Image (cartoon, rainbow, N blue to C red; front, side, top):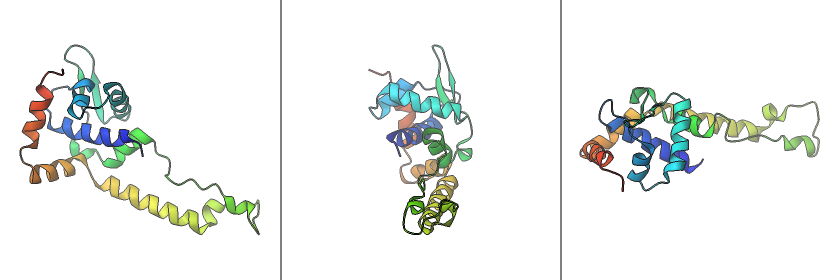
Length: 159
């Protein structure tokens, strides 16, 4: 998984704390963690294509969440950044091993492939069960000053 996923999740979380109706530029979001703005902007554009954030151009433009934080799962973000393909891709190497046959779909019959697919499904279910709202609530419970700190930091001019 690329670092873009981590950047996208943190950006969505920070956007959840932004002032209501306020758009935040990619430059300002990138400055928050000293990230390269151009690369973060690519992640934000992927989130926009997926309908997770919306973007507005112009002098007061930037990004804001397009959906309620409770309606944005970690799986939504991972899929927007990485795509929806499975983590494990069976290459059907058993076909070329002893006793391998051309008429067998080893993706379905191979026990290694089945185990990897179960693990991938469990991972996806866990990501789908966690939302930005869940993480936001957990952070606010352990660090109550975070929302105000984020809003203040996002409001400061980028140097």
